[in-house]
Amino acid sequence: MTLSLYRIKESNTHLAIFITVAVVNSIYSTLWDLFMDWSLLQPSAKHKFLRPVLGYKSPWYYYSAIVFDVLLRFNWIFYAFFTHNTQRSEEHTSELQSPVL
Image (cartoon, rainbow, N blue to C red):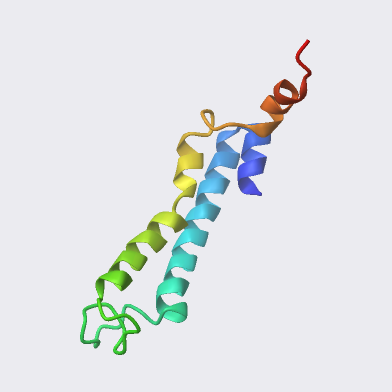
């Protein structure tokens, strides 16, 4: 919603609100995934930063999941820094729907 507000008004205030909300959401969601959902980042585990009992034999599945989770949770950065380069569907809708004569 904050991204939509920024795209409508395109003010620095709306961009700052979007970035602030996105940062808080990304950090909270990433920590929730890692600590609560996956029970990872346990300092006393056999494999560093994983949990004591692993479902997969290789710990690299978990390390990869941690990295990908962080990357996907912070994919909003693309929208924050490239807001003018992203496609806006409302601008292209009339072009796509106009009949060719």
